[in-house]
Image (cartoon, rainbow, N blue to C red; front, side, top):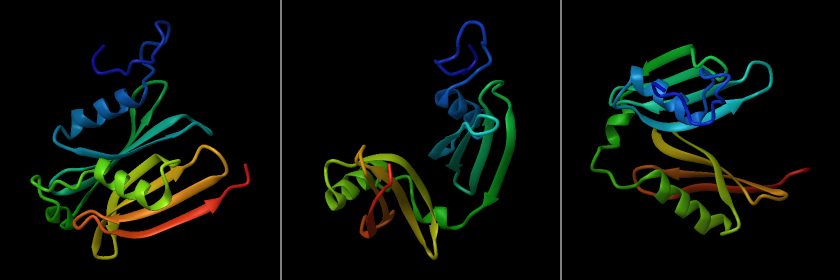
Length: 155
């Protein structure tokens, strides 16, 4: 199916899921490391995929119904060079550190790798599945937890 995600119904073969959105990004940037995937179903359902190549930060929006690229922005970066391929501090390691800080009842809903001032950081949005949300920032080079804020939600 040419990289189209696995949730498409036979009647709408061009509809994509998040796997199809990542596949679409990789057609344009084959060596990109995906750092964030979000879905917006409010007005016109789209996936936003953020990724890094060795020299760029990429943000791509993809229409869920058609699989077409709605926008494609690539910005040159220099800080990414700090995070070498041999670097072993992965998103999974960041999540483990975050859970150690906020508690094992939390799970990650979204994570991003981005510049925060002069530091490359993982930002994790977490929830306990109930009335609590956590925002955790972790230094992507050292693995140090920079901040961990737990909030009670109104759900």
